[in-house]
Length: 172
Image 1 (cartoon, helix red, strand yellow):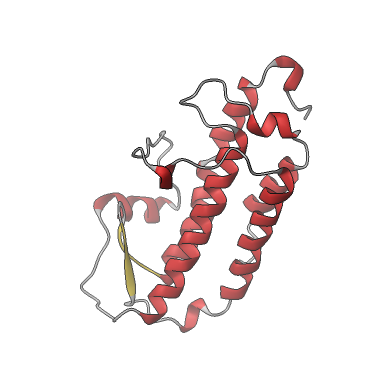
Image 2: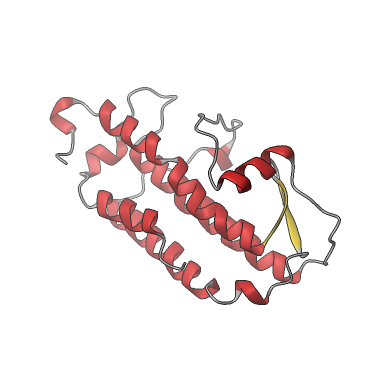
């Protein structure tokens, strides 16, 4: 549980990219691979913070998920649609992180996931923190979102790789 296969896959792929490939944007409104990685890392770390907040939250069995939240947890996956985040600095990932910075970020996510492995069972499932789109989630659900979110971005990763100029494309 503490070593997401998706994180391992992203880490492996990261070693194949050049710094130029990580920063390449096909257009200003399309993220670079580096921005996508930065988004994945920051989101996972936020989800892990929410796990910790659940531990201290008041237990309330009446708090539930939204309809969308129910669907994603039934299917164990985000819908296969592009989600446009609202404009703002919190939704504008960095395009300046180095390959090493991104690798360290993925390592930090893995380390924090390992820290929670085994501890999730100890947290009352009625202790929940609200997610903006999915409703009230408990610690296990916040933790599960990490893998779902990494999986969700695999298609975007392939699309961004395909947009790299021919002379910049990684050989797979």
